[in-house]
Image 1 (cartoon, protein in one colour):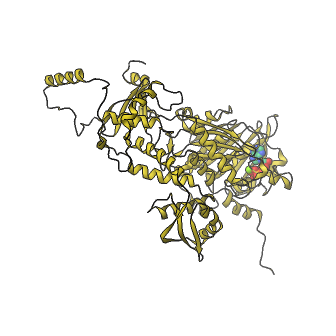
Image 2: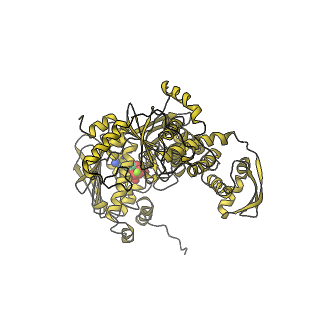
Image 3: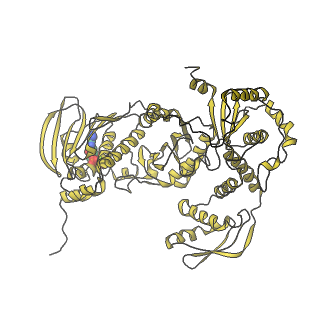
Length: 614
Ligand code: ADP
Ligand code: MG
């Protein structure tokens, strides 16, 4: 007798459950997706104890009749694929017919449903996948599914689950993403009688963002909207000053399906160019519409990963669209407002400054005298302060070179302020702690980080210079050898022509070693391996080399080293020159690493702080 047996349905379903429903959150996801596929516009999710004791999902969708209910818990039973061709044009979220049998196999499940307005429906109960009860019941149109005692018959899986808080976190995460994907559906999520999320289903994505992230966030979002022949992009993305510590707030949807995709998230981040701080990531909600026949959603049991054609084109399009939308904005920072001032408010901690400009040992009366004298003799806008070239210590490139000649010219520029100016005319008033320039304009008060500002000026200057430089290669005195793991080496060999096109004389040497004999002139001595490493990394992650980005990275590093540091005292004239040059940069708002350069306090805000206005 042969040894091979065909598993019975119950065991088969339990095995499938391991893939489809690994934790409470995946059950929530599958049930909500069914509700959405059923055309619901109101979905209520009621959870007890992180989903461990119960999960209930109620909808007002099309419901099921008795025949459907009988089939719904059979494996591979679905109403969503009518023919084999449909598999290649999936428009629904579900299609594998696996969720209900899988969930039922590992829980005690109650389903109530009706597909008409008669007020009558059907109720069934299943335990570990076996039907234990079926009866007619009073029910309005729609479906509700209650899942209790999850994993009661698969204790190993139960053990594997994390804490209640962790599981609840995953549930909230899914519900958030699904509600972002479906603004026309009103979602309510309740955990242990507490309401966690409610969206109103009015179709406005911004309202969903407000419900999840708060209205401050929603107000400061930048709209994304663009399309080409293949793709349509819509959504919102945060201003560069509003960032998170990880990429998980970049939510991507393809045809209404939440997906995870490393390359597309990277494209979003690259769209920010140098506006983001290192290791900070935006909050972005991006809906991508494309022909469903170009997307293969059948590669992952929970359908979180998809494959699609024209991935490279989509990446480029996303990056460009984000870059364009962001460049249309100006990004002078506002002072950071706490989301909940009443909670986050901290008493200002007044510390005596370490180095004091005034002598506080004077008696009160003589101090007043002295202050009076200072105020009387001090002109608010001194005409000209002599410039000491040495007071700013810059090795190769003095940005103060032609200050005197430029003075007249500058003043003229000041009077014909053009509309295209990104920064208003700013007058430096003072320097704070040798680090920040305090300046004013008609519109209020500004704090400028002198190091960041100088870095930006250097960066743009050098970038221009470098782009003019020739691409010619220069031979290395000592060739560089580089080793890579086999899997990577193979990919590198396939793309070797790209590396060569970048001006690098590279040759494979054995299975995983490469020899570099010449590099382009723009790579400075001592930086060769670092830049080669980065190139290879680009090949491995994106299949192409972005020379522009490499150069930018490098120049950003150089500019940082060359720029004036904090704790460096500047004369008023030096501050003026710095501001003037900053105004001429393309992006005076953030340094090449994405840190802010300038912060603005509007007149109104200041007056408000002093309660002069309400
Ligand atoms: P799939 O979603 O892949 O089709 P499921 O196991 O999730 O498979 O569901 C099986 C079938 O049960 C669905 O195709 C659908 O016809 C029906 N169904 C499930 N949930 C609902 C619901 N909330 N409202 C109406 N029909 C539902
Ligand atoms: Mg389903």
